[in-house]
Length: 132
Image 1: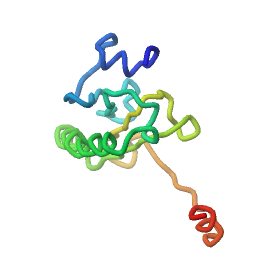
Image 2 (image 1 turned 180 degrees about the horizontal axis):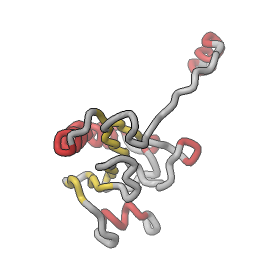
Image 3 (image 1 turned 90 degrees about the vertical axis):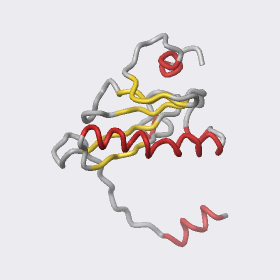
Image 4 (image 1 turned 90 degrees about the horizontal axis):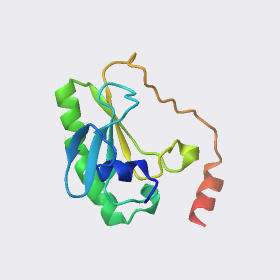
Protein backbone atom coordinates (compact mmCIF):
# COMPACT_ATOMS: atom_id res chain seq x y z
CA UNK A 1 0.00 0.00 0.00
CA UNK A 2 1.37 3.37 -1.07
CA UNK A 3 0.97 5.48 2.08
CA UNK A 4 1.55 2.72 4.64
CA UNK A 5 4.45 3.55 6.95
CA UNK A 6 5.04 -0.14 7.71
CA UNK A 7 5.21 -0.99 3.98
CA UNK A 8 7.79 1.78 3.59
CA UNK A 9 9.80 0.37 6.52
CA UNK A 10 9.61 -3.14 5.01
CA UNK A 11 10.74 -1.78 1.62
CA UNK A 12 13.68 0.03 3.27
CA UNK A 13 12.39 3.51 2.42
CA UNK A 14 12.25 4.39 6.12
CA UNK A 15 15.00 3.22 8.51
CA UNK A 16 14.18 0.97 11.44
CA UNK A 17 15.87 -0.97 14.22
CA UNK A 18 15.48 -4.60 13.14
CA UNK A 19 15.19 -7.26 15.81
CA UNK A 20 14.34 -10.12 13.42
CA UNK A 21 13.56 -10.61 9.74
CA UNK A 22 12.69 -13.50 7.46
CA UNK A 23 10.84 -13.93 4.16
CA UNK A 24 7.39 -13.26 5.66
CA UNK A 25 7.84 -10.77 8.51
CA UNK A 26 9.89 -8.04 10.05
CA UNK A 27 10.27 -7.33 13.77
CA UNK A 28 11.43 -3.83 14.73
CA UNK A 29 11.77 -1.78 17.89
CA UNK A 30 8.70 0.44 18.32
CA UNK A 31 9.65 4.12 18.36
CA UNK A 32 7.39 4.64 21.42
CA UNK A 33 9.19 2.04 23.60
CA UNK A 34 6.31 1.56 26.03
CA UNK A 35 8.83 -0.57 27.93
CA UNK A 36 12.47 -1.29 27.07
CA UNK A 37 12.47 -3.59 24.03
CA UNK A 38 8.87 -2.90 22.89
CA UNK A 39 8.86 -4.59 19.47
CA UNK A 40 6.44 -4.64 16.55
CA UNK A 41 6.10 -7.84 14.54
CA UNK A 42 4.89 -6.89 11.06
CA UNK A 43 3.94 -9.26 8.23
CA UNK A 44 5.58 -8.19 4.98
CA UNK A 45 2.34 -8.68 3.05
CA UNK A 46 -0.02 -5.75 3.63
CA UNK A 47 -3.38 -6.40 5.27
CA UNK A 48 -5.36 -3.74 7.12
CA UNK A 49 -5.46 -5.87 10.26
CA UNK A 50 -5.54 -9.43 11.55
CA UNK A 51 -9.27 -9.74 10.87
CA UNK A 52 -8.63 -9.33 7.14
CA UNK A 53 -5.77 -11.83 6.90
CA UNK A 54 -6.21 -15.35 5.50
CA UNK A 55 -6.01 -17.91 8.32
CA UNK A 56 -2.88 -19.54 6.85
CA UNK A 57 -1.01 -16.23 6.99
CA UNK A 58 -2.22 -15.63 10.56
CA UNK A 59 -1.00 -19.09 11.53
CA UNK A 60 2.42 -18.47 10.01
CA UNK A 61 2.69 -15.08 11.72
CA UNK A 62 1.77 -16.43 15.14
CA UNK A 63 4.02 -19.47 14.75
CA UNK A 64 7.01 -17.09 14.87
CA UNK A 65 5.87 -14.98 17.85
CA UNK A 66 7.25 -17.31 20.58
CA UNK A 67 10.75 -17.23 19.05
CA UNK A 68 10.87 -13.44 18.83
CA UNK A 69 9.21 -12.92 22.24
CA UNK A 70 11.62 -15.35 23.94
CA UNK A 71 14.59 -13.67 22.23
CA UNK A 72 13.52 -10.34 23.76
CA UNK A 73 12.67 -11.85 27.14
CA UNK A 74 15.98 -13.70 27.42
CA UNK A 75 18.29 -10.98 26.08
CA UNK A 76 16.64 -8.17 28.04
CA UNK A 77 16.08 -10.14 31.27
CA UNK A 78 12.35 -9.44 31.20
CA UNK A 79 10.16 -11.28 33.71
CA UNK A 80 7.19 -11.56 31.34
CA UNK A 81 5.74 -10.38 28.04
CA UNK A 82 2.50 -8.76 26.93
CA UNK A 83 1.56 -9.81 23.41
CA UNK A 84 -0.98 -7.31 22.14
CA UNK A 85 -2.79 -6.98 18.81
CA UNK A 86 -5.34 -4.25 18.03
CA UNK A 87 -7.94 -4.26 15.23
CA UNK A 88 -9.51 -0.97 14.13
CA UNK A 89 -9.26 2.46 15.68
CA UNK A 90 -11.79 1.78 18.47
CA UNK A 91 -9.48 -1.00 19.69
CA UNK A 92 -6.35 1.14 19.61
CA UNK A 93 -5.04 0.39 16.12
CA UNK A 94 -3.27 3.50 14.78
CA UNK A 95 -1.32 2.05 11.83
CA UNK A 96 -3.57 0.11 9.49
CA UNK A 97 -1.18 -2.68 8.58
CA UNK A 98 -1.37 -5.84 10.69
CA UNK A 99 1.16 -5.79 13.51
CA UNK A 100 1.67 -7.39 16.91
CA UNK A 101 3.15 -5.61 19.90
CA UNK A 102 5.63 -7.52 22.04
CA UNK A 103 5.97 -5.59 25.29
CA UNK A 104 8.60 -6.96 27.68
CA UNK A 105 7.66 -6.63 31.34
CA UNK A 106 10.17 -6.00 34.09
CA UNK A 107 8.16 -5.11 37.21
CA UNK A 108 4.78 -3.70 38.18
CA UNK A 109 6.09 -0.12 37.99
CA UNK A 110 7.50 -0.31 34.44
CA UNK A 111 4.93 2.18 33.16
CA UNK A 112 2.58 -0.15 31.29
CA UNK A 113 -0.71 -1.39 32.66
CA UNK A 114 -3.85 -3.05 31.32
CA UNK A 115 -7.09 -3.01 33.28
CA UNK A 116 -10.05 -5.28 32.63
CA UNK A 117 -13.36 -3.91 33.87
CA UNK A 118 -15.93 -6.39 35.09
CA UNK A 119 -19.38 -5.87 33.60
CA UNK A 120 -22.50 -7.81 34.51
CA UNK A 121 -24.03 -9.55 31.54
CA UNK A 122 -27.09 -11.58 30.66
CA UNK A 123 -25.06 -14.52 29.37
CA UNK A 124 -28.09 -16.36 27.98
CA UNK A 125 -29.04 -13.37 25.80
CA UNK A 126 -25.43 -12.81 24.82
CA UNK A 127 -24.94 -16.45 23.74
CA UNK A 128 -28.25 -16.37 21.85
CA UNK A 129 -27.11 -13.29 19.93
CA UNK A 130 -23.68 -14.72 19.15
CA UNK A 131 -24.96 -18.12 18.04
CA UNK A 132 -28.07 -16.88 16.21
